[in-house]
Structures are given as structure tokens and as C-alpha cells.
Length: 67
Length: 224
Image 1 (tube, one colour):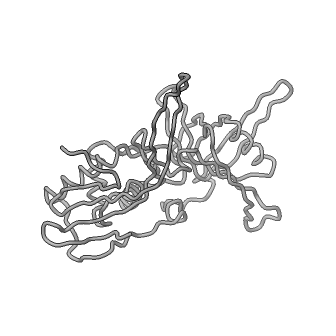
Image 2: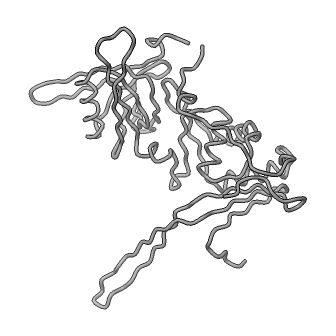
Image 3: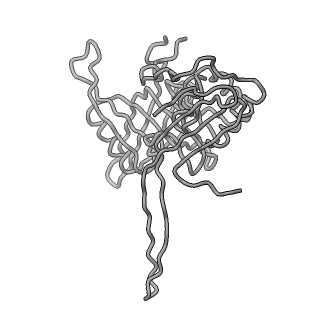
């Protein structure tokens, strides 16, 4: 993991990586009416950036919703 | 440094059954606890360290496992009823003070929250064993994954003090604090600081070297 200060001018930033546990939760309805609850836990990386101009960003494996 | 009898507090455990009353009073050298708003004079213990004899330490260990309550008092800490609550962890070991033939027993009890890193994302709070600027900033940066440099520590502490996001909690032999806020909040303050020119990026590109903190450093007796 590359934690530190990188980039130049407007791209100058500090990066901080860490491992984060993500939990996916979903439910299934069986034909007989039984509701099955699923929880799937997994680890993934999270990258947090702070730019010299004050902007911040948190990047994960998940796609960001379009504005 | 003050003598031990001036620095240490007391932990008292009273267990009443149909046939007998057990009363145990042990020296308490470290304690971290959080006063509960209701009922009054009760606290949620997060960390306690006591020394005593074999039987006494075993009794306290059993009491922690059962979720029993204790009375705790010490320098700057008025008598308060405390409990480590469920899933607390216990660690026991011998201590050999100079000039004593028999070793003492030492017990450390840690609450589930404190054992899990002192941070709860559900409640946006972080419990820290020390109130020093560098320790608070380094711990929050590590726990929440916040990019930063050690030189921002004093500024960050002033920022959380200004927003009343840091409150002292009960402590014997240490200066614990509770920090309220989540990662987004802390990043927002960093953003404001950089935007306003209160904090600056280092000139050099490359890795950031954070100081390391060991338990001895954090829990060392406070100098007079």
C-alpha cells in the first residue's frame, strides 16, 4: 500500500489505503413464503485522498452513483 | 512521580448471597470509564487494571465474566459504580514486586468496545486512552483511514475541541478521551483547513512517517 504524498500542482495529494469489511445483504422469498436472509462479508481496499486544494475523495471497488 | 499509594485507586466488589457476604477491595492502577447520564453515579467501564492475591483476582475475574458491578474510586475519580458489561475480556498474570516473597496477581479487564479498537461506526465515537494531540490525531487517522501528516496534530486537536467533539472520560493513571464524529466529518474539517490555509502540505513527496506509540508510553504514570 502506498501511503504518502504524491503528485504535483493541482494533483498533489496525500493517499491513505486501508482494508475495510463490506457486508452485502439480500433477501429471497421462497415459494412456500419462507424468507431467506443472506449476509455476505468480504474485505476490500479503500483509498482516501486529500488534495492540496482541500478536495477529498474516498475510492472503493464499488461504482459511484452518477450524479 | 507520586508514590503508588497516591496514584492508585480502589476497586471494591461486594457479593451478597443467602449464606455469606464477600467483600473484596483491591488496588486499581489504571481505569478508563464513561459516566452514564442515567442513572447517576454509574459508569460504563472500558479498562481496569488491578493487583491483589490469587483468590481476590480470581473472584474479580469471575465477577467480570458474570457482568457484575464494582465500586471504583481514585485520584480525581469520585466513587462510582461501574460494569464492564457483556463480552468483556480478562487477562491475568503474576507480578513480582521487589522485597516480596510471594508474587502478586495482576488482572486487566477490557470492555468489548475497547478491545475492538475503541471505535464504533454505529455510534460515530472513538474511545482513546490518551489526550495528547499527536496520539489523538494519529489514532483517528489510523482507525478511520484519514490521510494526513503528524504536523497537523495540534491543529486537528484545536478543531475537535472547537466543535466540542472531544470530551474527557474517567481515568486513573491515564487521560482518556471520547471523540465524537465520523470519517466524513473529519475529512470535511481537513478540507476546510487546507482550503483556508490553516494547514499545509509538506514540500517533499514520499511516504509519511508516523511516530509509533507503545502501551508503556500511553500508560506511563503522569509526572508531577
